[in-house]
Amino acid sequence: MSDLTKLTLTDAVKGLKAKEFSSREITQAHLDVIEKANPALNAFTEVTSEHALGMADAADTKLAKGEGGLLAGAPLGVKELFCTKGVRTTACSDILSNFVPTYESTVTQNLWNEDAVMLGKLNMDQFAMGSSNETSCFGNVINPWRREGEDTQLAPGGSSGGSAASVAADLCLAATASDTGGSIRQPAAFTGTVGIKPTYGRASRYGMVAFASSLDQAGPITKSVEDAALMLEIMCSADEKDSTSLKIETPKWTDSLSNGVKGMKIGIPKEYRVDGMSDEIEGLWQQGIEWLKAAGAEIVDVSLPHTKYALPAYYIVAPAEASSNLARYDGMRYGVRQEGDSLDDVYSTTRAEGFGDEVKRRLMIGAYVLSAGYYDAYYLKAQKVRQRILMDFEEAYKECDALLTPTCPSAAFGLGEKSADPVEMYLNDIFTVTANLAGLPAMSLPVSLDKQGLPLSLQVIGKALDEDTCFRVSKVIEDAAEFDAKASNWWS
Image 1 (tube, rainbow, N blue to C red):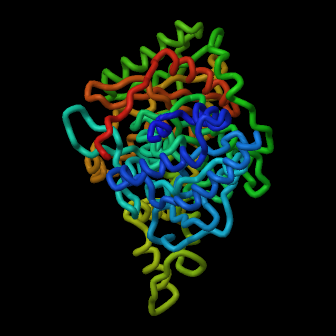
Image 2: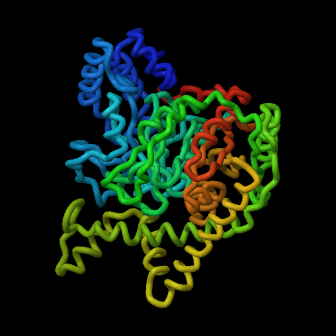
Image 3: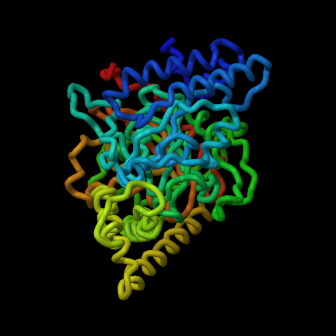
């Protein structure tokens, strides 16, 4: 029965509709694997076994009648920052340790409307602040992959480390995730999985615990490009509960996956060739270019001159928005509360003990850049840089249909190897933050292994609202790469 966990989401849905196996069978198979693997990987913060089997039985009832939604009976994982009615949602922070929502996020409700099954909640960096999943109050997530000949524990990437690790280790068919500066794409790259961040506004942010409201966007982590298209079609929707939600119809991206790239122009931004990037990443990038050429695409060189300012601009804008969003966690309305001699004591003690070090670091940065006398010098200037970055993309897209870049400057690193230096950790987002600042769709997919046996990935960045091209380009690369490597099972 455990072989059912090896299926892609697409194949599992087909098997369920063909009655080759039941939802209860595939759900139980995943629950059994989670029970063995989670003590080692720490990907799930909570496993909702009874709830999952109840949802599976309900899906089986519909499937038996020839009914059921697009994901009927498929077991999924949910990142810990998506509110789930009646199931604890903490954003992996002590300050929300006792919070049980009375409502469902729009993204997860869309999945349940299609009769998917929730296996449980997935670990993440606290409030989505991190690039290695080392800031969670539930402890580190462990990457299923290991360097050849070593047993060093590797970071799964962040903040969606639990989502990426669980998909890579076959603990769920697919998982929800979120991306503020690369938190879908970087973990996907570190774990040999597929991840896409859609255009800002495609997916509702209602019911997502906020980090930076102008940057956060939901998306899936999956085992294949086709699975990502299927998940994203369902996750995205217009939503009156979210004022930033785009009031447009969600395309059926699965229908155009096989349309290829013949006649397309793919841009190669020269600024993404950075100092210190390994020869393996450079070679991988060139290989991706050759695959697209062979499929009939034209390769053009483009320039994004303000790329070098993207990372500092991001680490001003994101903490500033976080300092505003997280001001609500004061011990008064929800979450934990520490007692004090005065109201100020309650506020300060609750926040000091409830927030982790990385969250406090970013909140202090955010409060500083928004403070009187520094707003114009930092925050306002960062917003102007952000506009320049968007203009760079708009100019580049006059010459091409999409961009091809590396996802990350390196493969997965060891836990603790970069956590002592926040700046070095932040540099992991160097290739991903631009898409968030510009609100563009971007997708990461695995294409090869490095000399240490770890996955390496490429990134496709599309025009606003043109996820279709991201999927088509990625499908061509996926088919050419024929990447089917899996982490060796050392955890069970």
